[in-house]
Image 1: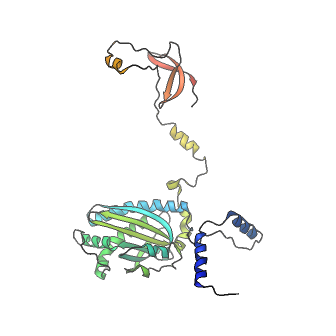
Image 2 (image 1 turned 180 degrees about the horizontal axis):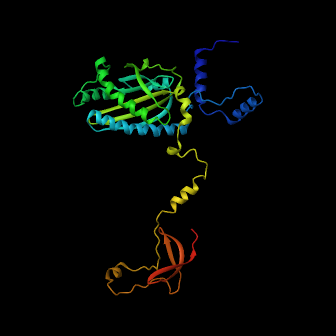
Image 3 (image 1 turned 30 degrees about the vertical axis):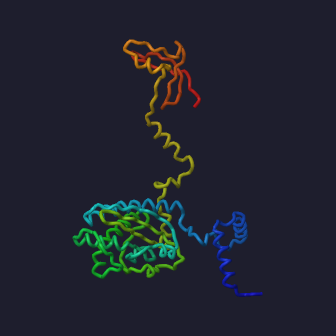
Length: 332
């Protein structure tokens, strides 16, 4: 029996593994669960897709989106004031990735800040495209921000000025997450090579946030990477009800919605009748002319609500005003 696989056999196995990206079959999961339940000492396990990280739930991701969208708006105002020009900042994406995947996706040249954010247990990465950061440095120093040539790596002096741009961005991000955890950041290191950003093993899951800043002669990306292991203790504090509607039992909001809808104004009218006449006759109509309707005297009239026939009844008076007495309700 051959104990060592050839290169071709290994490649074949890897291709088979990649082709099976679907979730574990439900029957297999049930079988595993029943087997575990028979052994009280067995650890609780759940199926994990080894190719795609699923550590952060969809509801939690939606909550993070809400927080980082608020951070983007605050960052836009702060950056605009700092650089004395109108800057737009958008939260483009919030997703869970493996650190190795994120490192492969990051384009260059970029400036990477490794930060310590107490009380998070692991370092956090914040990066900015060099073109955006260099333009910001030029604006801070009194220039126009129009950069002809972008340097690949900053000097120590340039990083000192760049910190005046990065620091307020980190402040706004930390403020947006105060409902989850109060963060206190400090910069540990700065470098231009993303390969040096090995804050956790490449296969570990991270929360990756992607901002895009744009303005007059300025365009670039701001990215942030937070290890999942650091966030896990605080996920229970996420309030995703306001952003996604999750967290309510089905039907629990019925009374509140009904109460709100009861105050909504709707249009109701009484249709006395209708007729069809030639356009020539319509153009010849003048004051005093009579247009016969299809409704007979004493026949029920129709009262549409928002243009949809809803009630039938008779025309009458109430005091010195015309009124409509509801005689029936039409099937919708």
